Length: 114
Length: 320
Image 1 (spheres, rainbow over the protein chains, first blue to last red):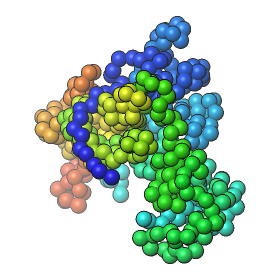
Image 2 (cartoon, each protein chain N blue to C red):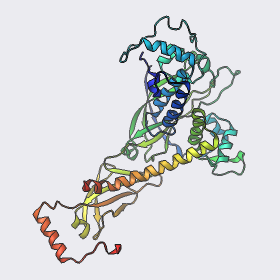
Image 3 (cartoon, chains in turn blue, cyan):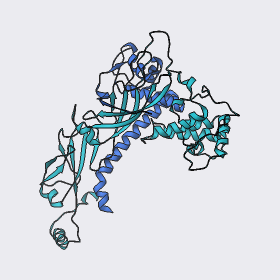
Image 4 (cartoon, rainbow over the protein chains, first blue to last red):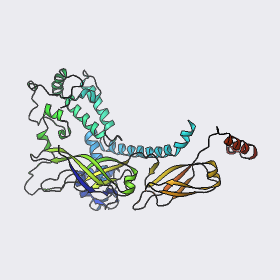
């Protein structure tokens, strides 16, 4: 396996312009029906647009869509299961963050008590 | 080639039933799925699971694999399948395997053949002249240090990206990327690297590579969104009387921080805009931690006794 070093500068995905339904499908290599069903489940939320034709999504929607696709493919979870899993994962994430924060604040106090 | 113990990977005994294997796989797949697990090597573990299950779930492949295992002894590195091992089974020539075999190890490929027929699946070539499409965006997780985001450092990552080789097969190619981290990126955000993702179809461009950022734990600082906080110990008299203390900042410099008089333990002092830089820069918080001098020092003991005897202070009034 040959290795090449590629020098590259990145951009912050979340700060880039929004994308439409067609772009979202193309980035995730999926079809519009799947994305529409994700929106119906509230897994991803279009930020504007009355009808599917005018939907705009945050760039981060492609990450959630990709996660949903992988969970469906790898674990055989259906859409409501995917929605529930992603919500619970989000919650675990924010709880972990809070816990880290509290642990950090308590560091000195804990050290002193020992 | 290294022998892979598929039973060990799935955590089952060699005499496990097909049902046992299925259950073990499903349970571990949920645990190590890269979108669920927080471990950075979950991707590797998940692929190994998939490979083990691909073989063990199929009684024919399992039987062939078991025969092989009889001759193998633990610790043997340079494993080679016996030349006649496919005699009773026909896995050669590929096309037999359903899974995404380009992810599997060379051990798997040598035994069961790469899924050549399969890899054409969604990257089929020659779908009519002129057909082209941009490649898929590929995701991966990376760990960086807080300082990398703060200063916009360069970081090198080694990553496997699917590519189409001269024979039209998908192969994982190891690439080393030296990435300029966008200044001020938050945990949970992704770095987009143009055209470093999955291969395009026809003359289509490759997709992008999206690197999901996580910060490795820092010795001093903790980060919340764009805010950075630092615990700073102060002496009881500094907290009580006020003081100016030197504190380190994430840019590697130092700053004089004014501690106001009568500061309680846990008081947060804010340096506006000194958190992670960028659009809507975060704040830098100094959290005061009152640290007592050791009472083993007779002087400290004397001062404390004096305070106890002369100061009227009941910290537990609110309990009653």
